[in-house]
Length: 245
Length: 320
Image (cartoon, rainbow over all chains, first blue to last red; front, top):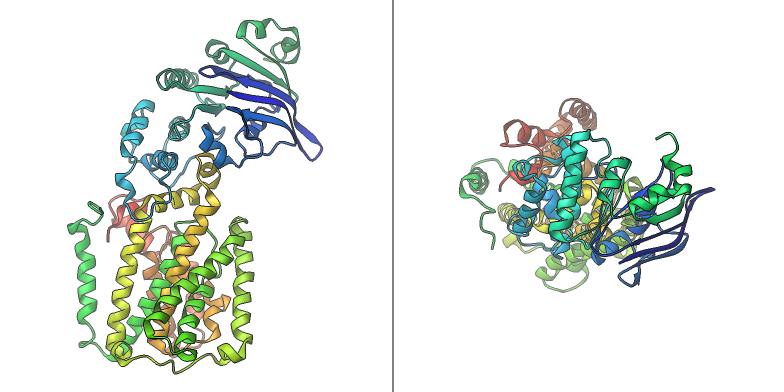
């Protein structure tokens, strides 16, 4: 479904991503791990178009999307969440998701119909599935951190993506919140038939959930394989697992 | 189609204000009728700016340019051609929107302050054009004595005409801000990066917003000509644009009706303080300082927050 081939990205002299490979098959949960500064977020930004690669190919459903702008990539069926809660703070929780649903339905530029009657059902369904229904009327900026992160995922769901990319969905969460969020992600993947690509710091989480793990180190991908093989791999242990963590 | 948007109960105070304004002319002195009409014209201008500033988050620093384009278009059509009045009235807003489109195409490529800087430059180009092109625009003299049929230019009928156009424009603006377009515009204001990531063509959306806002600015320009019967290059000068910007801040740029209040305050200050001293901007300056410290959301923003049902998404809660 998604194939990243030998991708490169430098900022001035710093090679943030230096020959990374990744493949995501339909219906799987794929994790990207690696120490801080390994280039995980940059890789995600390259896939979703926030950054343009210097070299390499990103193929999604048979099409090279590496030169597309973010909104076109999104319309192709890739939605993402961000590492820091990236929401619409002045809008209500309901509106946050509705904006995304309206965009997916191609209704964003409708001028003379009240928005309150549009895309309501779908928005409510998403609110329910992530458990934010009771906070629908709150201003998004006033939500607790954990809820903002959940809303972040909910906004991405509004786009009805084929592939959902989550950049550290549990960053800054307590262990309980982390477990709850991973449960939510697993449940969403099953009920909506989503393919999910995510990166994560918590090793326990990654090895329990992911079906395939890609390990990044200093901008390049060391290996992508099943969790067991990754755990046994010598290069991975040297680079990462054997280290401080 | 618009079911549920205008609730009768919530609209009542506004209908009350409208009716009061309708019956005022025979009651109060002519001078005040004129001032009210000036406030209406200015309010429409400030409202149009606020669509992109308050709701769109764009630093539209030179909105006056489009106001001027609207005014000059109608003035030129009425003085230099023999086209009928209504052609001028319709051409004004469209000319302003066209100018908005042309300038907007370049500006939306930039963000934040850079957007504003480029807009001041391009808008000032328009000003220079009007200022220098003596043979067409009369340069710094402007155009005076623009012929208007008395049935709309006598003072009371001009007042009524302007009031009714204002109300229609406000209703249309309100509907636009309530529509998916308006909601998305506010989402872009809050977080353009996120909007890109959910499949919104941010630049195009902002550009449409600018075209709509400049269209309304053009209407305001036409009303100005109707009221004053003259145009001059100061309409397009960037200092005036700054005044419009301040009106939005003064009234409350995250609310729907705030700019009307802002316009009323500015026009009143200029008129009534201006009688005593040329330095009325001094009073404005002090007012602005107080505002920043005590009412950062603007006068109307403060009222909505204090007495409105729920604060936050102010435009979602207000009703007109």
